[in-house]
Length: 312
Image 1 (cartoon, rainbow, N blue to C red):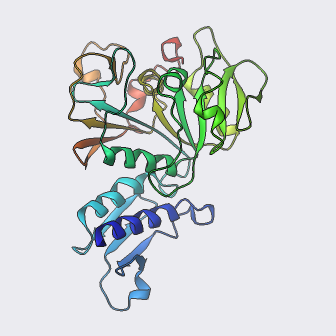
Image 2 (cartoon, rainbow, N blue to C red):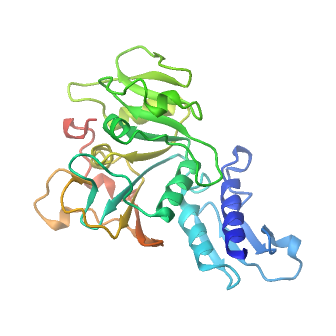
């Protein structure tokens, strides 16, 4: 079908921006036209009007024609700010799916599945756009995620589990599934292998755990500067409170849980003018609504600068 072909072609063009040889955006910047089976550079389309005008370093879709489906235009607009051309110094992005009343799981930790299929597709696209995907030990133990790209075309990121006290069980999928390498962050001074696909990585630890800044530094030393934080709520909250997130995405499903585990828990404030009001874009993902918040200019207002309250 034309619609699915256009979505496939749009995603292929977006993924071309991840190629190290074209990470400056040269493969995306400029004008494109829809050929009926794919997006091609404007110069191959003769005098025909361009269907897309992309400013890759700015992370913007400058212009789009009526020939492009609205959902496809949204896909470009949604993803362009996350590509290497627009984030040359790295990206720390957090994503969570939550209910309308702000929960990510029941009180017992059950969270499968809050969002619809479109939200899952979006999450897997995010995985394909980064170098590493990170979760806390509790999320890894309760949800037993694989953290791989399966619903869309794309490469699997390195899987990272924050596990200072060694809680991750030996049969965890991230230790036994060899589809992608896994780094398990542990307190200590030495690294070692846990399985054929997993190794431990030492992170400096204080009495209250790991500082988000130290986690990012250790991962950057391994060449991992494009990071997706998937959860849980405590892990995302600590990165947010420490001012270490560039973007936060919340996918809100039309679901009322009524009680359970909150999406975010930040240090208390006295007045609403102390709250974060970041620039936010809103997208429809099937029945769900995605809120994409740009935190680069406002996170420092609430940053505790890795005080004990922000330790993991």
